[in-house]
Amino acid sequence: EIFDSPYTGMQSENGGVIGMLEVVMSDFNRLKTETEANEAAAAKEYADFMASSEATKKEKHDSEFKLSLDKDETEFKKSQAEKDLKNTQEELAQANNYYNELKPSCVQVHVSFEERVKGRKEEIAALHEAWTTLDQKSQE
Image (cartoon, rainbow, N blue to C red; front, top):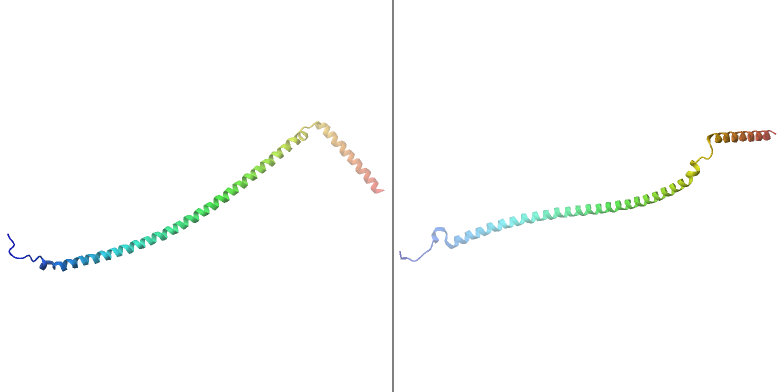
């Protein structure tokens, strides 16, 4: 099996080198088209993702800002309520002290019931006598 004739290759079967270049060229064009389509889809997906992320970021920032304002307002109201409570407790303590000072003179009765009734009757009689005297002088 010695080569009796010169090697001519397989040019006649598949178009030879030109055919192979045409296949490579068509593969390259197909790959280029697929890559461009994939890149366009990825770019659109990226743009959609970035738009969504920006909207979410803004929404979260606004929510954080509102929560911060609510927190500050609540802390202010709490401090005001604590001040009001302190002042009210001080006023209550003063009122209780004043009550404790007045209580003995108001609650402890040094006069019996009978003596109070007798005193009221005497006072009513004195008022009646004074009214009668004034009524007589005004008629004169």
